[in-house]
Image 1 (cartoon, helix red, strand yellow):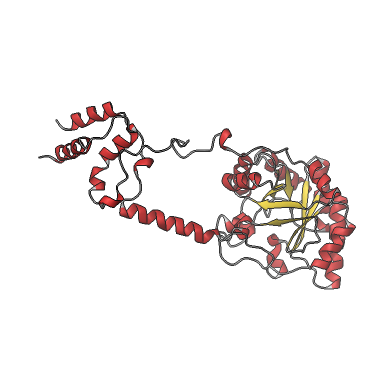
Image 2 (cartoon, helix red, strand yellow; image 1 turned 90 degrees about the horizontal axis):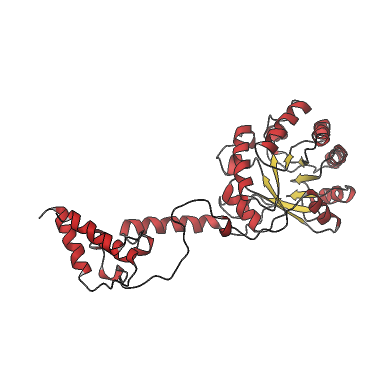
Length: 353
């Protein structure tokens, strides 16, 4: 007997066990076609062919979720919204995102501002420095996050080398980030030396988020990723930088790795929000790198609170999947596509010739 004939005979034997025509056609078809696999499994691993699965709304294949599947849309966060939060002293929440899923999750969580940070160079792309990422790579990630962002205010880092040579250079690249990257504002690093560039950007209608303290793009010149403003003299320079950025038109300023008393004083003397990352609770808001706070890479900076340890969960799930595939438990009947019983009969008849 040929292999196809043996297969057909096995299917007929199963169908003759009394499978009701009222059962799900998908279960009938899937069960019949899975017989060679099921023969390798113990009887305890069988899912009853007469069991009708409950109705579950599923997509036919892996794709972008339909609009109806996405979260409830809250009012759009704008610069005016951020100013209102600041005036009533309500802390501003900021979180990084680097692609469509992470952008969607940040937006769904109700975060006020989504930052496509150049930290993605290291935590998403595996580079050794934030300075390695290119403009084209940043634009690619900005577009992906923008597609998942419906309410949160969207800002992105200008990558290293895209704004330092002068205001005209910065304007050209900032325009690209807004037009091609679909962001609503840009962030750039530096103190008073960047004031002319920031002023030019804001004059042409491009909102700017400043960034002082530890500026990762300049970590080589800073001697590494170290806390800034630890001496009275350096703290005074940082205060001067913050005032210069405010005067240049920044809508807010990130303070990174700054002693809490210094950050609190800067926050108190400014008339725009400060967003802290390793700068204490005295800032107007806080930002974290999403991968750090979700525990995806083990060790995290001192200033980061790990809210979940997803690395263990994800690795565990992947190991379960591998074990299920190796043992034949996955895919099961509920993971198969349906085939009408009459078409299954025609198919079995055709291969039994």
